[in-house]
Each structure stands twice: as C-alpha cells, then as structure tokens.
Amino acid sequence: MNNHVDAMISDAAAATQAPPPRHRNVEILLNGPIGPTLARLAAPNTIAFLVGSGVAVAEMWFVGQLGTHALAGLALGFPIFMLMMMLSAGALGGAMAAAVARAVGSHRTGQAEALAWHALIIALAAAGFFTLFYRLYGAAFYTFLGASGETLAAVIAYSDIVLVGGVVIWLVNAFSSLLRGAGDMKSPALAMLLAAAIQIPLGGALALGWGPFPRIGIAGVAWGAVIAFAIAALFLGYRLVSGRSGLRLRLAALRLRWTLFREILDVGLVASISPITSVATVIMLAGLVSGFGDAALAGFGIAARLEFLLIPIVFGIGAAMIAMVGANMGAGQLARAHRIGWTGGLAAAVIAGAIGSATALWPGAWAGLFTENMPVLMAATVYLTIVGPFYAFHGLGLSLYFASQGAGTVIWPVLFGGARLLITAGGGIVAVQSFNMGFAGLPWFVAASMAVYGLGTALSIYLGAWRHHQMVQNTPEML
Image 1 (tube, rainbow, N blue to C red):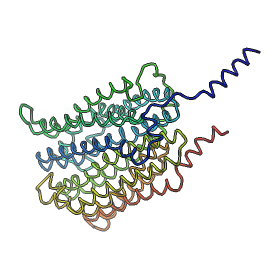
Image 2: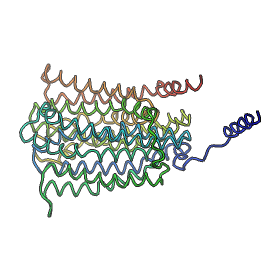
Image 3: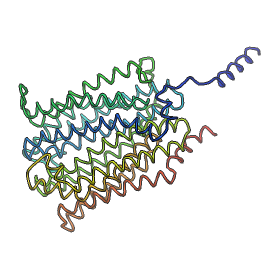
Image 4: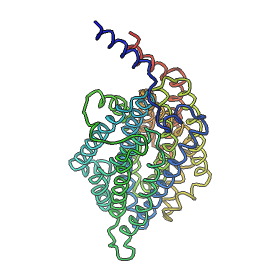
C-alpha cells in the first residue's frame, strides 16, 4: 500500500515538474518578435539561395556557349533536376523540418532526434527511387517530350550525371531540413555558399575546358553540381553529429517506429504532389513549345528558368516559416502561427512580384544574359512580358505552401497547385490545337494559373484550414 502511495506521489511530482529549458533557437521561434525574427531567420537562407540562383544563371551561361541544342537540352533536363531539389528540400524536406519543429516546440527532444534518423532513411529511399526511375525510363521520357538528335544527346548527358549522382543532393537537403527544423538557419546557408563556391568554377571549367580541365560539354555542369553537393553533405553531417545546433544525430536514438515515418510522410507525400504538378506544368509546356522549333524551346527554357530561380528565393522565407509555424503549432500558439504565415506570405509576394515585374519591363536584360540568337530572344521576351507581374501570386502561394507544412496540413495548397496544372497545360493544349493561338497564347494561361494558385491558397488559410487541422489533431487528446 505504501509503495503504491509513494508511486502516486512520485508521478504527481513528475507531472508538476517544470520541463527542461528549450534550446535558445527554439525559444526564438516561439517568443521572438515576428517580423524581425522572420527576417533574421530568412536572411541566411535568402542570401544563400540568391547565390544558388546565381549558380543556375552561371550554368545557363556556360551551356549557352555550347549552342542552341545544348540550351534546348537543358530546358528539358533542368525541370527534372529541379523536381528532385523541390522534393528533397521543399516537400519531403519541409515535412522533415516541420516534424522536428513541432517536436522541439512541444519539448519532445528525444522524438526530434529519432525523427532525424527516420528522415534520413526516407531521403535515401527517395534518392534510390529517382535513380531507378531515370535508368529505366529517362531516355524514353525525353523522347516523348520531343527531344531528338543533338538535343536528346545533350539532355541525356546532363541527366546521366545529375540524376544518378543525386543521392548527395538528397542528403544535403535532408541534413539542412533537420537543422532548420531545430532553428539553425545558418549552417544550411553556409553549406549552400560552400557548394556554390565550388560548383560555379568547377562546372564552368569542366563544361568549357578551362585550363587543365577537359571540355566535356553539358555533362560538366552536372559533375560540378554533384561534387559540390558531396562536399556540402560532409559539412552538414558533421554539424548534426556534433549536436551544436540543438539537434544531435546519435546512434542511441536509432529506434525505427512506423508512427515517426508517418509523421513525416503524412505531410511529405501530400506535399510532394505540389512540386510534381509545378514541374509537370513546365514539362508539358516545354512539350507544347517544342512543336514550334528549337529556338522557341530554348527561349521558353530561358524565360521559364526565372520561375525556378524564384523558388529558391521564396524558399529562403519559406524555410523560416516552416520552423516558426511548426514550433508554434506544436506549442499550441495558433494565432501567432497565423501572423507568421501572413507576414511571410506578403514578403514573398512583394519580392517575387518585384523581380517578375522587372523582367516584364526589361525582358532583354534577362534573356540577353544567355543568348544573342534573335528568335530565341523574341520567344523569351513574349513569355516574360506577359507572365512577369504574376509571379507575385506565385510567391504568395508557394510561401504559404511552406507555412502550411509547418502547420501540418498542405491539402489546399496542393489542390490549388493541381488547378494551376489544369489551367496551364489544359488551356495551353486547347489554345494551340483548337484555336491556333500559337506560342504567344501560352503565357496567358500560365499567368492566370499563378493568380488562382496564390489567391486560392491564401483564401483557404483565411477560412480556417490550419484551425480545423489543429482541432482534428487535438480531438483524441480531449476524448
């Protein structure tokens, strides 16, 4: 009897005992002033992603020196590479960061460490799937999109390296996501800067044969990416093992549980539909544009690449939103999570809209960086002039998609991403095949789809998508 009473007293004391103090990174997520905290957390990522965008611009310039066929091949191959980046860093990576953020926000440090191992296993499995799919169906897929001759040879030479060696990219983005979820934005940013410092000169040297390096063409930019990411993976892996960021990767936490896989995959798999539809939109457009010739395809590739460059910039803000929204949802601070979402969404819309509008006013300043071929320049100009201002809506929708990952529910951003695919691709097919609108008709459907994506996602959150999800999650506990 006395033992039973002693146990009850001990349990009561444990229940009233104050939880251990959170790491300072987590306290900032939960209690720091929203605007300044969001800006401070987003700054390292945004700077690093801007540098990453510079890598993409440099690679496009290198490939531009190889000729129109190489540019057209990159226009077909780069979206697949970006899909891998968007899945590993944005969709599954965002789900990893959000799961860790919710765990540390609710004082579950041990679960956060266990989630890290589950996240790495998911990343390795996904990398293997990507490689296998490409080896089985890659050439046939590019042929289906209209690639042939030198263009097909170029896209295969690029993809053979960057997709087969993509495991290092998955590791970098998984490590980065875990650190961001714990509130460490600086280490992933430093890794991106390190990768960029290696990738730009190495990719150019291998593509164009600078100095003692062999000239291997478009495959050179792919090798530059793989080698740079491998070095970045070593740096980030060390940061996780050391535990200096508040999250430690240690063998004692390696206990696999299906519930932890589900915590990541329930959000990550649904979230993965969004980048798939985004890239599918660009790929289907590329297939339509290929019917107008290699010059139109190269021009479209230059113009559409701007969207892929804006994604990393918006993700700089979105990565901070995932961590902040996730931690606050884990701590039960819904109102603060909403304020974070609207603050970051407005900032992303302004930045993306400003860049897009600038390219609409001066399209030659962007397209002229990569080519002097007049038909290619004309195609890029037509696209940018129409679509440019609507990138504001794309920035709004994409940033709120990342914030929704932190909230643990992404169904509405994904549905409106699907609507974007239907409007762009479906409308484009009708415009070209039924109304003979030509290349100039396609950008109007792209612009309309961006508006639907951004406004629809914002409306869903305003009407209570996050609040409803939190109520559903808390119902079992209340019962």
